Length: 66
Image (cartoon, rainbow, N blue to C red; front, side, top):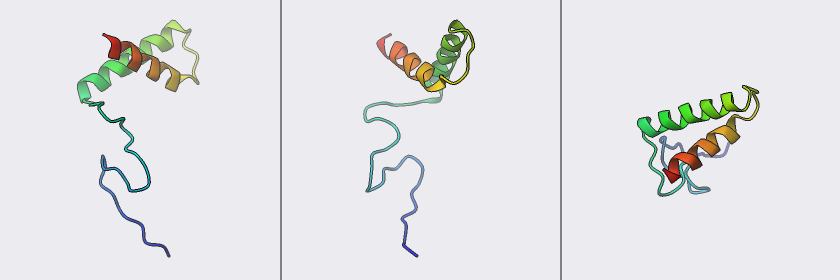
C-alpha cells in the first residue's frame, strides 16, 4: 500500500494547486451572491438544467467586475 498524505481542507497538496484560485477570497457572503446570481442566470435561460457550471462562472465574472 502506498502512503498518502492526509490534508486538511483548504491546504494545497504537493502535487497540485488549491481549489481556490490565488488572490480569490471566498466568504460565505460572496458565495451566496454568486449562488443567487447563478440561479438568476439559470432562470433567464429558461430554467434548463445541465449548465450549472457555466451559470456559476458567468455569475463570478459579473460580480468580479462590479
